[in-house]
Image (cartoon, rainbow, N blue to C red; front, side, top):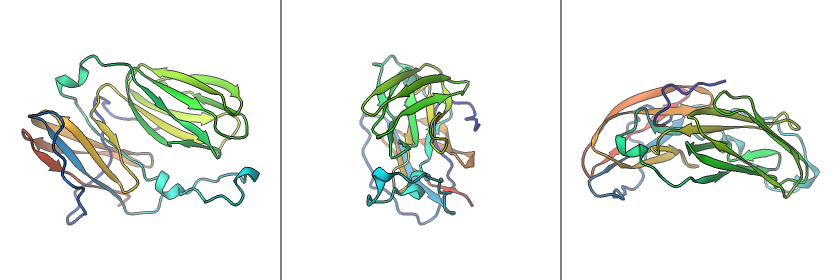
Length: 229
């Protein structure tokens, strides 16, 4: 099982890339704070999972598994003090659809409750043996949903007891400075107080990498990474 080192603020594996396409700069939401943004580039094709044929999916568009497997998480190794202020207890969602977990990679803060709705035509049984949060939701039918609260930081590997090819990752952080890359590999960490930080990059198939970066007041810093070199 992969280990997320010193999980206090999260980021994903990326190395500086010259000449990469940059996302449009965005002003920080909080005056005086800055932002860190960039792109995680993949140099090799992600492995495609073996999905069992499903009669209900015949004639439907194919799922772009390569894109799904390219999701990375970028985060700060150590969070600024403001990251630990008390906040409302949020909820997140991980669907079971076409015998896959959607999203495959979910990043949340400690105290978040995750709903696991079954949107398939078959039964599912979501479980995890991870030390961060172990659980077994039992078997439940289409249209039903069950939930789990995550109170410790770390990585949780999620499976289905009925469908062995189903798996996903939930990364739980003790702060709010983390982001999952979008379909183009881009990420953004906003409202970062001025200071020097270690930015981490995580991907399910590669070692975690880190970069040091200085963020100035009202500054937008761009930082790219490369996975699978």
